Image (cartoon, rainbow, N blue to C red; front, side, top):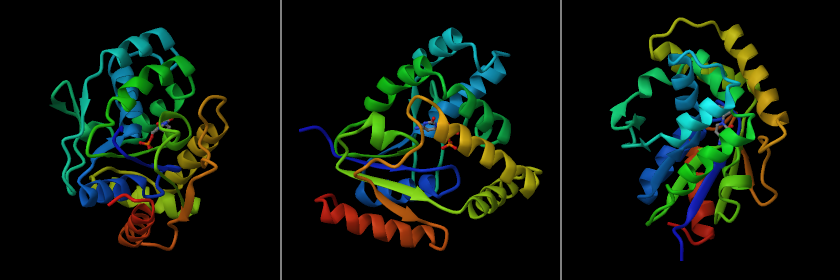
Length: 224
Ligand code: DC
């Protein structure tokens, strides 16, 4: 039997990354930060001066990627070809590029195999937009984590400020709204809750509360 999978999908800033990391650590499972893959492509495209609509070049880049997440609970590192680039991925320009190139089916297809190959024993916790609907439709546990857009913008703002970036809350809110619309309305793999996903609103919950709720749900499904 293939390794169990827990998917956590939802919009940016809902807390997917934190919850996925804590849960993976608790279960001793591998972690897949699928947004990081799209961001890596966005970052690489910007670094090479490629346009985010140059689909053939993006597919070639995606096919050449070797990505690992050598994480611990406090380590959100991402390595590409063995080199840590996590520090370069969390900014608005890269997020915007990632969201733009994510609308192209050949680009998504190129990242699909990479994501599926990360399913290994004893199990995988993945977060993204389409993990429960497209990448792992047979996942044992599917969570759709949502939150009010103002709450999500404030969280992202605090994260970026803590990372030493100079940003404005109003600009973040606007960017999030634009990205939300693009992610939710694209033709292929739009951001939507799987019909069999458990929907959790994290607006008034701490990460620990969400993790406790997800863990309990996992146990009810025979995981953990
Ligand atoms: O989760 P994130 O903010 O790091 O993701 C950045 C962008 O990547 C997001 O705006 C849309 C895209 N993405 C996607 O299309 N599918 C995924 N599974 C994950 C991210």
